[in-house]
Image (cartoon, rainbow, N blue to C red):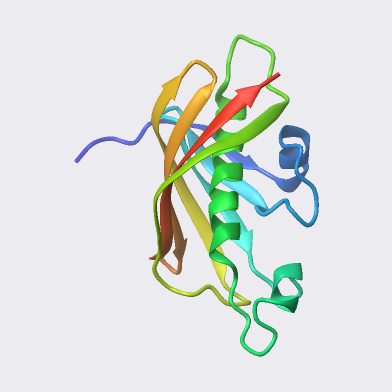
Length: 153
């Protein structure tokens, strides 16, 4: 069994996320990020509530949290991990989503669920980062994808 990397940031709360990412309501899709490790991994947290704007049309009679919003939240979590992990230079001001690969949706997410976005770096080249993400509810994978992003000034 391999040893986990040390935790660099135990908690990035909503106030720190607002200082890190340019996203705002209704497109800020994570509430906090925990356990950002030296190996560029971490966990984004989203508390899904019935009053989410997406539920007005997806679907009013049987609300299901949209899968594309989970993928965007994976990218936002990866952005926080990447920006918080940059050392020795100015912090980037923007994160741009580049790629989505190997995306799968496994179970519906409903109001009242808490989604954990388990992200880990799978590659980096200059300002471009790639992460694998597993979205989990109660320990079960509900979605997964590889996402790529670019950090810019």
